[in-house]
Image (cartoon, rainbow, N blue to C red; front, side, top):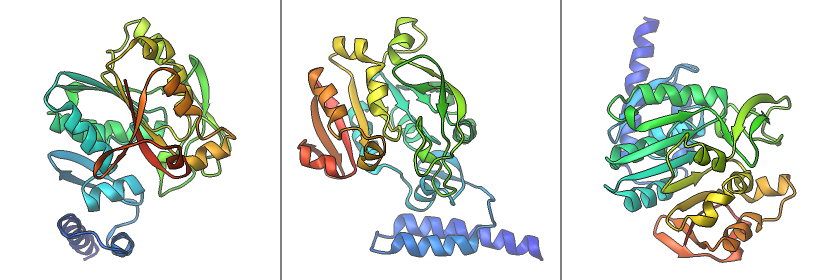
Length: 289
């Protein structure tokens, strides 16, 4: 009887996901679905579902998986921009802070000539990323997993995993209010060293989502960025992370402008001209020459 109840709840959950993806968004929709999901899910039991030709193992307690399962996409504007820019071109993207693959896996499905190098230093998140890769044998040969952090130095570095059950993506190279207090040791490398040693393909695009450590990733790529005129950089700007680190909100922007990059904001309508007023809120930015 119990097994039948679990099976019935699983079917209802999958139906709710299909309905949610087809039904227009409205204020409070996410909250309502979260309540229904907590009733239908069986504790931490994951659910496997294919969305837009990509198969994932979802743990809907986690916000990234929740968005993917019930809304069909995570980081919608970034994904749309990259997919349109890459198209069918022969391209390489470094996904720095790949998490569970919510951006790079759909890109691989939509862009047939794309190669991905996915960087994810967090051991528990990397494990989930690896599961998702293995569920997609049709695209797995075009993605290379890098269980390391990119930073401005090479060696071994402290990493603080997320202490939030509902958001595994907030792990960081620094101790924050929503990370563990005790670090683990992870390997790190500079992008310049990887390129110099020819261990990795030169990127056409670099997508960075590293919880406030974007500056260090870019510092570790200075030699490459000074000479490259074709690479586009898409990065997340989170003011609260920079405030916790006591860094100026303009630090990444100044570095990129000094290298000759022009900045734009990415939103659902495409690109907008950059203004420093945008630095007071969360934004996804594009930098290109």
